[in-house]
Image (cartoon, rainbow, N blue to C red):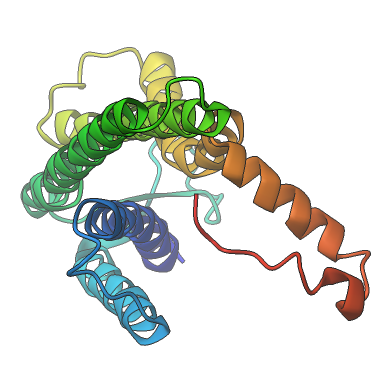
Length: 244
């Protein structure tokens, strides 16, 4: 269980990170290069399959060097209470650097680039659209505001991603590099738990961000909730687009 739980925890985090990265690339192509982008269910299914295979394979080192040992703080007669640690701290240190570079820094740079480009495309289109259309047109004003709101939302998504994921990577690297040996154990435990909690918090906070900053997400979310109580004949017009 020491190996399996640690492995599955890593898989879940990597799947979330790579999925967010893939979504940013897909949105960039759909918004900034609509003529060359061709979305399909097959490509989406293939992308999901690749994401899971990549995450499952990249987390395999945990199945090798993680092991359970008896905790010196626990009496020897109690055999059930053990610690799950790495059998080779040097390999773990290298592996943590690998994870930070491949599954944090590179995804962060990709998302930063794509979302900035998306924001610029939406901002420019809203500005040019306002000039081209009648300034008194209510539809033009609403569309301009919606595009600017979307641009701000995408920037917030990247910032929240960085804030939520950087603590766990730094915590792991500091720990395996021996930089936390002199740190108070209670403080270290609280920091470690908080950093891991933030990774899951990132997945939970994204729908909240969409809800507060995307009118279309609000609309489609209401439709999804109402579909549960509607018959097929009444709900055929309430199809979900899946787009923000």
